[in-house]
Image 1 (tube, rainbow, N blue to C red):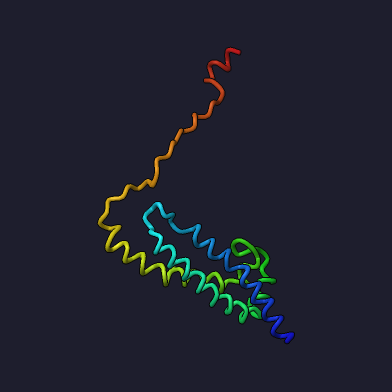
Image 2: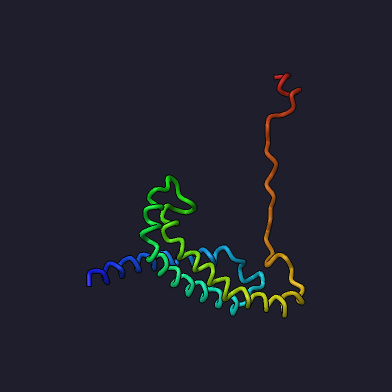
Length: 145
């Protein structure tokens, strides 16, 4: 029973990293305004969660190897020192995201987006350029004073 509780605690730790991995994948992908329909994004998100669950199980199995290595790291590999420890979760989420979302996105591209003229900018943005920096006047003005 104690082994089951310990394994459950470690599995819950892996489950804590999964939503962050899925959110990172969502944030790094193009927004819906650039042509990704809801069914492609939903399939990719489902694949990310499915792959993340499998990767979380792999993280628990590989924890005796990854935990000591993450303790030896002097600096974080990316976001934090624990990133290497739970890397199989992120890799599984990314693989599932690609395996389920990629084919649907390719089909949507082939049969729809490639044939429809879309503007590059999804919305109109009011861009006001900055004023150039103001420095000291010409040298002749400084010499007079």
